Amino acid sequence: MKKKKWIAIAAGMIIVLTGVVWIGFGKKIKTLYISLNSFKNENLAHTFQHTPEIQPTKKISSGTDTFQFLKEDNVALADEFYFEGTMYSTENFMEDTKTSAMLVIKDDVIKYENYFLGGDESTLFSSNSMGKSFVSALMGIAVAEGSVASIDDPIGKYIPEFRNTELENIPIKACLQMASGIDFNEDTDMSSFSMRTLLGTPAMKVIAKYGVQEEPYTYRRYLSINTEILGRIITNATGSSLAEYMEQKLWRKIGAAHDAYWTLSNGTELAMGGLSVSLRDYARFARLYLNGGNWNGEQILEKDWVRDSMNASAEYSKPGANNDAYNAIGYGYQWWVPAGDEYEFMAIGVYGQWIYVNPTKRVIIVKTSADPDFMEKGYELKHVEFFRSVANSVATLS
Image 1: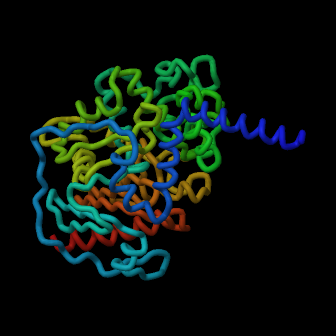
Image 2 (image 1 turned 90 degrees about the horizontal axis):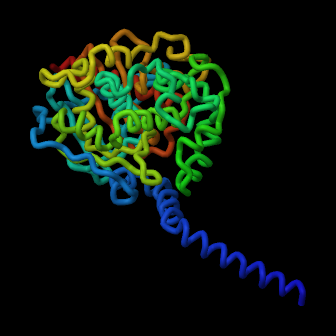
Image 3 (image 1 turned 180 degrees about the vertical axis):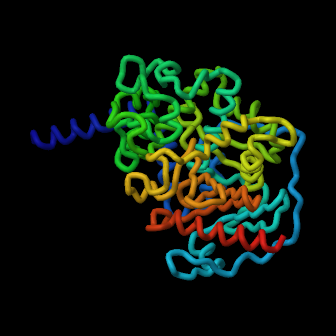
């Protein structure tokens, strides 16, 4: 009888606690459930094309003066490319990597554009970590306008939660270069971080507890919380949300054709990777960098900022730094910089999202995907060779 009594009491307590949790966090738990379900392999393509319908977001409105690329009939891409001595079929590679859309532009002319898995020209594709490169651009604007005095400033100057903590004196530049030294593991700590922020703990308060693993500029370790820090610095320094700042300082100025949306986490823009953008609008953003920050005569980004953003000359920034597979490609200010002599740079997002820019050949490639095998060995380097093959074929035809 006693056992049954305690079982009944325990069951009652669970029901009460569940009710309390649901009253306090019901919407957030529902959001978490939807998010987890959205990232099942079979749902990825739909999720990455409908994120603003699935997640809470903030709109970034486009302007009325749309920049139009010229459009030609699709050219034939290179039939094959080589990676580590093996030949790969271009068609098979695009299919195997679950490509949802691909766009190739040379000298402002669309040479190839194709949509798969249900998308079209107006579809907003989730950026995942490609969005980090947009945050870098906003930081560059904030510095140029004087809202942020210098990227050599300590992050504690702009984020009160970091004052009197181990993180206080980390330079902004170290966060830009993923060399902050914060004691955080992207693979093992991200789930806990996301859960705590979803349930209401402010992100900066969570980050302030992590401490420092090594001195800044010692190693490059890819930590998405670095970009969250950059986002908070921008908002605190400018007094605008990331979406508002992007709309005013960037989106309306580059002739975007569609509104973009920034995913919210606990009511705040997810700086580490929350943008949803159309394929051609990704290319418009890339065009800004291709032209040294100048947009048809207006210097939106300082030329020096664009140049420094692609500087991967520091030991911790170089391709292959730390003999770490995660660092096979070099890294600048939230942009990836492959080894080579054509000054290429890329934005990369998990599950196969790519912006590739080749300034030497004046080629922009945008490729979105829904690929659950994105962690496969050599995945990123193989894509670099694929993009180079495509860029070469397009340049040869011009």
